[in-house]
Image 1 (tube, rainbow, N blue to C red):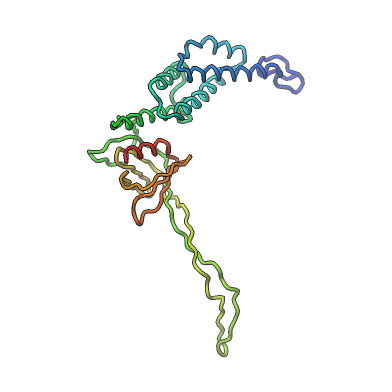
Image 2 (image 1 turned 90 degrees about the horizontal axis):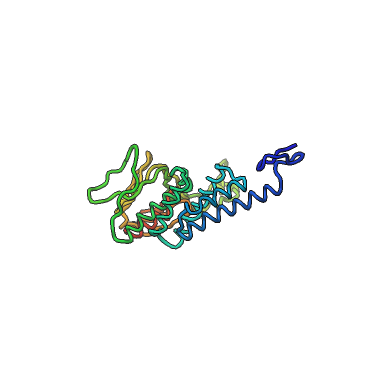
Length: 275
């Protein structure tokens, strides 16, 4: 006889759960997520609902591990909703801080989906919108490969960013079939020796992976293969993507660049407001 993974009682031959226990569990997961989401939406203190949350978990067979997973999921969803209508405001920031205290989860766990990082980035953007140079809110451990000028201020730092640059590939198409024509005794010239016309195609070439530093004036990139400095004043266009940021510099010989694994939402807003 199989044991129900929820209540621990006999579930029947080759069965792992009671249908009624599974329904009770699923309803409890939905209720718990709803209580937490409502607190985020209404900016309510989570401690006011601590008893209700404990009761839901106990009655719905929600263990501590699953409860913490629900906490992280709702936290990610709520931060994204906060950001949908602009910068995180003071009340929203206080709600986030209260939830961190209430959940008891380490910040590294809550930041698995980069939500906690976006809260800090939102604070940086708010200072930019207020016309202030943002105070550094990240610390860099280990090697810092950039030499900043005395007049610029550090804003953010990214690791494991891959730089790709546009290149042109030339190839020839349209080779002939190759007919032999006799020129004189013992000498032949194949017309197939003439090649077709050249065709150019563009592609993104992987240059290297390294670090990116944002200041109030420049974007820096460093890798073993290449290092560069891009002044914001020289940027012609910015193209944010889900997995990185495309940049086109204002120069006749400058090719489009793509920085993969970069937070394009944050970088786009920083550069746009400082350019």
